[in-house]
Image (tube, rainbow, N blue to C red; front, side):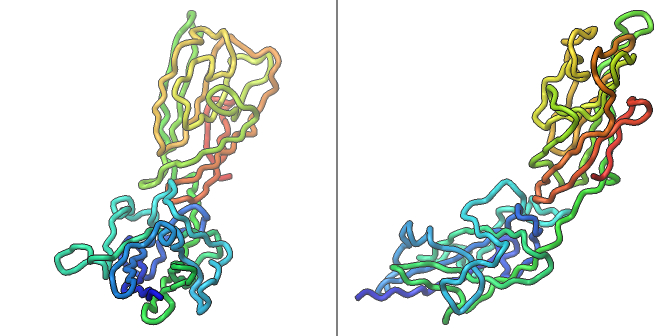
Length: 323
């Protein structure tokens, strides 16, 4: 009967090559990357892991039971998702993917013969600020080996952080006069585009908008009532919106120069909205609305923030608030 022995079996968090980390927000989205280093010997001979053995590698709750489940609210993923590892405010993007794999390199920096590295990703929506202990597990020929067994006793610890929320006062407003035309003497069509920029190091990975109605390019935040001139309309824009016309900006058709393009800047670092206005025009059947549009974003660290965009100054100016 062949003898299987793991001469190397250890695990480390890739960023910093450490066995302990708090660089994880308990938001259910962000992951922390773990490197599991394994050298399998069969009858004393270094032997590559099979595909099934590599696939069996996981991270679970530290326990004397090799079949222990992972903690409630925790997940171990086999692939990286779209969210950045690290902590808001640090230069985390430069650290992503930089692995210093302790115990797998010799003094010349070369990977030791026979050692294979498998990567896994932990994430959690469990209670923050509670330190949890983990172990790596691999199944070989139906037998489970863990990093909580002699001679490979090692503990991974994670203390997840409380997810933050971006506040409206942290957003930096840039308002652009994106389109202006005097279509007849003293009568103007005017479209302003608002860009509320997120704090440094943050980017939008997902944005959902919920307004009075979905319109081309976004959702309504405000609109003038029927027979009221000038028309004034506020629209929060989808992050994907690129082509936007004067007609789109007021959710109508047949405006003077209505097919003309409104200049938009695209990017993932800001929330966008437009305020369109047209003198001497009115809607036939709309009801005045200014209850705003709720904007929910998930940023690059997986944290969720909510805002409300509403109009002021007789629907002439758009403002953003915490929701």
